[in-house]
Length: 388
Image 1: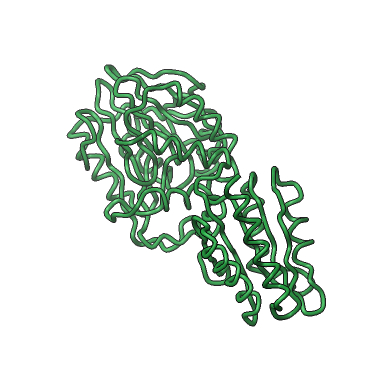
Image 2: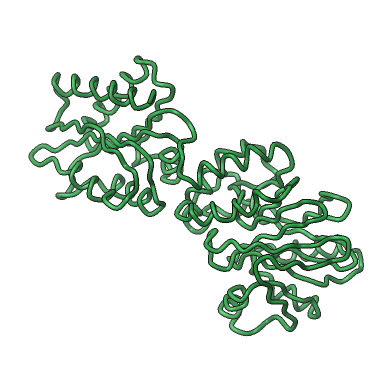
């Protein structure tokens, strides 16, 4: 248990047993599942934790309560890493009023197979719940990143309980930069819902926020303008950093050599940042994160079974399903007898917004002197884009 203010307790847990979050994302530093308790005339518990940590969480909760009983359990998000212990909680505190919206309770019944909440408070967007000194205002945030998601704003202490927004990978007992793992988390999990994030940011922008309490990652107390700035960039699909990402796949090394030649040319010509990524070996979520961070992307790949190399296809699909937009893309394609990647890749981005395709360099088996000259020209084109 940790005291965040005189009346707010942190009772979350760290998970170092997990290897893949959501069965997909590598989390070498684990995960944090956050839960909070507001102590007032009436007590509100803010969410539960993952199923594997119910006993630990209930012990932390009992310590925070110091003999009192909770009046409310506020459910901001029904994903099981936050809601799995609702039924267990209600066995210990059956008179607690569970607070959520209509979709919250529909999902609760689906997960638990019965109506586990004896007492309910179904709230509407903007509704205020008084705990005594503290007043909680509920702000609906549908599809950030589930349809039932809502935030709570403590009007007294100016604290925003932001569900999965402003969260990150990593347990809280390890130190690491916030932005990198928050960015990977955002684009991996929330990235497809930029407009919905923009909608809730507009509501939040009218509130004086002095602390953000997410369901994953650290509580944010200082430099909140920077966190809000990054979320504004990410959710609007803006360019966060100048630079070029080169993502490649290569079977026998020839496509890699061409991509490396371009990377070296960009560096020599003064490109602010060049990210060189082997899609077969790098964590795919890391690659997706970099593609969204920078404004220019080079895709270098080979023809494979009449299509494009599988890791490149996975990468492009990951970008498209997350609404990749407002970017410039160049292509290096390699085919010994049929170079098809440029046509296929452009088709995959056909419905994406504001994608500008730069030059395509076509290699037939191995990079020639003419190809190198084309790559030098492409480097100049990319640099011109950078300075526009």
